[in-house]
Image (tube, rainbow, N blue to C red; front, side):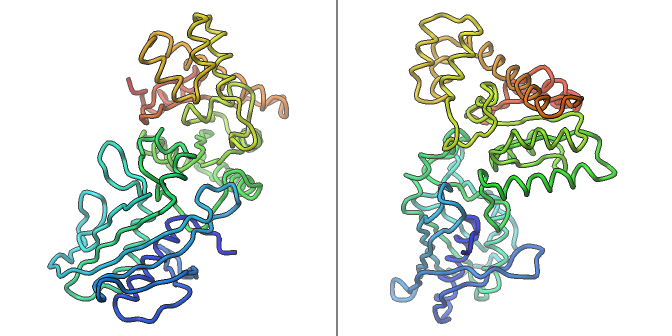
Length: 382
């Protein structure tokens, strides 16, 4: 089984459509070249055809990205391609991050940033498109690419995309070719290997930051956390907390979206919703500990999500928001240390927590989290 991230399948369909448009015969697979790697990937294609009297083309494939729980698995991908005469071949980047010879359109089902309307696509996906399309581009032409994910909008409802300001579909935010399922045992082993390698470097100073997924990684880098000290954990936070202590980490920062890390404040250390949830129940418990009014506790307990609870409280009782989410950050730090000490009684590792909200604003931190980001010269928003 070819298990690649969504951007790889998108690029494969786009390359197939481009090959058809320049007169090449349809092939059931496409060779996808990768940045800084000699060996290409072989990616299956379902079909490809010319449209509009040969002025456009369409290719279709289906994403195979890992285990059945992966939201993109089986997603159908349509790539529409057409050429236009253009004098722009400089490769200069334009507003959306693409070179001037490549016009990219996020069609139906592809996620866009609500604030700007630009497609939510990673640098890796952009580079992958450029590397594979530019050699096929006829001289004096630019290329227009439109990607459609027919089920993308519905599938995105099962993700946290909207919490990160992404609407209308699935994001193309993979940062590597091979799929790594955040809840699989293979992903845990992979993360442990990365952690051990990072901590074994002579330059390692004892600080690490954990993020769960691509959105957390993106925001952590923009916030200013050192890239070589950030590890994307997936959902396996419990075992990786212990592994960090075993590998000599002195300061560990849990940097994440409140709707994910809230589970840790309730003692749940695997964050995939298929295996453990209870987020609203945990949030209700936090509100009880802060002794807020019974009416507000009822509002929280009846909320459909942590995000909705936060929005309702911000609108009607903003004064309680820092109390509850500050308590969440505090409990995450306490519960995480308790989890580590359950397995390593002599650990001196300090665990800090920093939380961001649905608008990607970094807003809350526990005591150790605040100390850790201050020591890096960083500050919370707001």
